[in-house]
Length: 520
Image 1 (cartoon, rainbow, N blue to C red):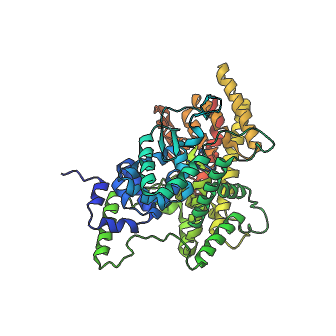
Image 2 (image 1 turned 30 degrees about the vertical axis):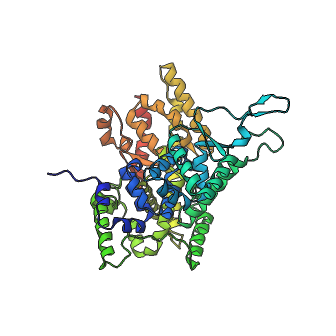
Image 3 (image 1 turned 90 degrees about the horizontal axis):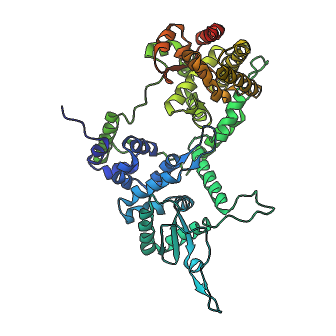
């Protein structure tokens, strides 16, 4: 049986692909790039429009140090993009760059090169005959003159590519080249002297801050949630009072988000980036070409969602019966479900790492199901956002905080003959107590590893429960403990999202057995 051709080769062999690629959604293009690898996609990227590339860059070259923290520009990833664009030639690269946000182009280049006026850094002779070499930051191994500017490398990885690009722009796009070089020159100044305003952002930092704000604004118009908004929403959702007489009022973060979306829809010529697959007349030749591309993508699994972690379909149907029934009768609230998944993607972690889109969706549905099952009987006016807040409060109160407090109680009585282990157990108890007082016991995860030395399945179960988004690890199931105990490692993906009270009962039983588990 012949081996299937790679996805990229099949796409590029599709008839009229040059007319189809500009009509694809940017997120579909991004998935293709992720699937094939950016370095393998120069011909594919060359067919995309600058608008599509700009949307992809808003996602692809920004990284958050950890979930819930503002994303930062990944300069090295920008260098890979410059290299890929130049593989199709200077003309193609220039065309794409001219269509991108100018401040982004400057930031991407300034992360790799420093730029100075040639006259400002050239040696000169004083009237008394002395040779003066102007001091600048430091002499770098890679430098050259392009036009009236001296360019020096901050990073050497794509130095040749950037020199080739800037030389092309100098010859073919002199006005744009001069703008870019002046922008890079502003970001090449040395550190300013400390004075009364030293806590203010310098010019380069201010430009980067403005660039990040512009990107956040664009993504907010596309329905995304910023890390700050997501963190604020989740913090408020943890503090819901389920015993109050009235249901919660509209969450201010969610209300502001949907107000923004409504205002965009009300704008006649709003740029909602509605690039869709197969929007052409299906009877036309172009429609046939689009259908062929869609077929290739589906065959490669690019348009399919990864399998969820909630078990097989039959189990899912019974486990999520409440939310499935609710959504069938409230189909208009699917948009709220997407907002909540975006909140988890932007502002929450799953086992100390970011959510994937599918995991965020699964966790949202599971939390909403838990919220419906525990919805106070005296409340009315159910909606997805309020339902999620109920479920999120249950996860915080009855899972995360309850597990942390139970572990603190066990640690009070736990004694170990090994002095090092006993010291680490005492440290864990101190860290848990401190962070429980702040309502964030998951911040003690670093100290939780000592439990691994006592019982690996219990450690895995506790890590899943004492978390920003608690999950039910297989280590909690008594029937799985023997298998896990004999295994050399405990799989971090052997978990399911908490969606029903029957799982809460299993958690309570695990915590009840915890003293005998750790003390034996």
